[in-house]
Amino acid sequence: MAGLIFKALIGALVVILIGILSKTRNYYIAGLVPLFPTFALIAHYIVGTERNIEALRTTIIFGLWAVIPYMVYLLSLYFFIASMKLPYALIAAVACWSLAAWALISLWSRFHAG
Image 1: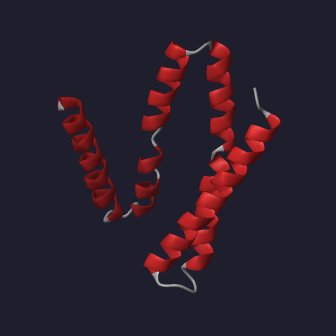
Image 2: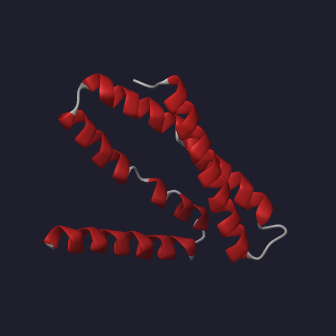
């Protein structure tokens, strides 16, 4: 239970940091904070300790390709905000991310099955 509370506090601190940064002259740095590799560190540690180095290397390579759905999200949001209200643009961008993630997983599974 303490671990869950600790994780929730870290999440809250990150949200506060994003809120503070968004009000500064360098507001755009708020977009970098969520990209800190917190979950990647956890995933790489678990895969690296529970599997072999080759599995970790595969996970790392997949992570490089996983940047594509995020780019799709950012690009689609950039264009959607010109013609939609922000909540709808965010929902549409998440839908684009979901489609890109599904395509990535499907292609990866097809060509790297093993």
